[in-house]
Length: 401
Image (cartoon, rainbow, N blue to C red; front, side):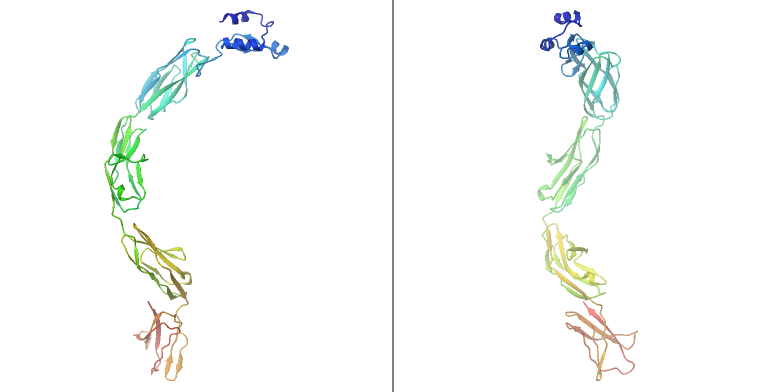
């Protein structure tokens, strides 16, 4: 104990008081001095303090609390193997207290390991990796008294090297398509993954799946995955990516044509195109209506099918939109009342301008029907003929494509 503090400790504390400035000077000289205020002193003069000696009150070396002069922990680093039992005993010493009597852990304990009160780290680690274990050494054998916290580097190495279980597959794609190369593997973590193209690293390719967007001929080549952990380095098999030659954009050679149809008819709207690997997307008034071929076939036409039709044709070389084709849907095809004019019978029906129709006749319902006329581009189709001798005839009218 410093002489000046010892003298104060031997003085009658009830009669000796210290001015705050003197107190500050003493604290600079003796960092292990604790300031205490007696009940009598507090009542008499709140600004005056009694200085008394108390052992072990100052922090030492930043991370130490109480074990002044702690020289460190032995060992400072530990290496274990994942899945293999391990055991190592730590020792923390200090110049003031000697060797710590008991131990605990405050953070960084690897899964599968425990630290005993005597400082033994033991168990079977279950996760590979690098850990910072913070060990606390205590003054007493029951985790009491002063203590010190020190760090230990713990490395849990892998027990199982990487093994490729699924090899990436070779692919052939057209320019502009997206492609994914995938591999599967086993092995202890941490495992570092990296894709290579012809032994050159692929930028930012650190997952089991390599995805290439909008591939071009320059992307063609051989690819493989490298896997690394503590026990080894392995490569997957090569996967060859083939990029086909550029494909010409579709060319429309025949635009879709608008139609006027009767309700109940089958509606056909078609387009003629040159190109390869073509896909079709039909719309009506900008809304998709299905259809994946050059001809859109809609049966049993109704007013809901009227509108403006277009089709977009796409292949790997690009896409092209057709011209608009307007479809109108009129009422069902029906006969008007026949009119007799002299020795002829005038027949009419609700024809649509621009459509062709065929009129057939038969002596009875069982037929046979024979064609009397084909009519085109006139509304209110009319047929005149000589009257039939007998009980009459049957007539039918049909729209032509």
